[in-house]
Image (tube, rainbow, N blue to C red; front, top):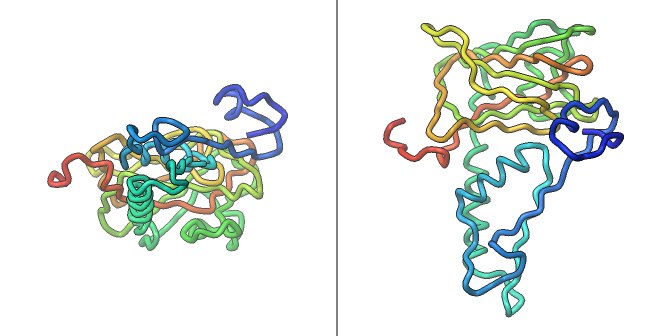
Length: 237
């Protein structure tokens, strides 16, 4: 995002040609009201996870308001809800299914210091960079075995600028060939895509394709996860 355009629409932010990356801030209360009311209950875990995927998972700072009760204390139901929320986030991102792939290849590599394996750690200082002047690019991961996931995470080293403007993630199927798993516009510091409810991708080969950019694409992290909270019928998996 940029400071030289009005922050009025997602389109303006996604297409900005500015130089400064500005993360938005999302303010929401754990309860229906901003202040505590005895007859109100906190949001459900499902609602809070939806808030997470629409805020923190999209490059936003999430400020979750937890109002004190009439005694000046955090209500026990709010406290328990926060604990469940924290445990759920920890559980979802505890196992990265793409952490130890059989191989990682790319459309091109600028040098050995910027190879595609650099996306396997979570450091912003290490990243994949293609040859200069590339208008598109891709990274392919061979997981070594079929893995089931419904959540994916991509990061850019935003200290080098927000460059990606459109990307696709595809998976390989022996009958269908490459098929679309997820696609969106900008990536930024941290972009997490969750598949539709009850949708699970099972694949061995995964490809990240950069279709539109403003400068050479740089990717510092790619992860695949299984979010059990996005399933209504665990027995079917």
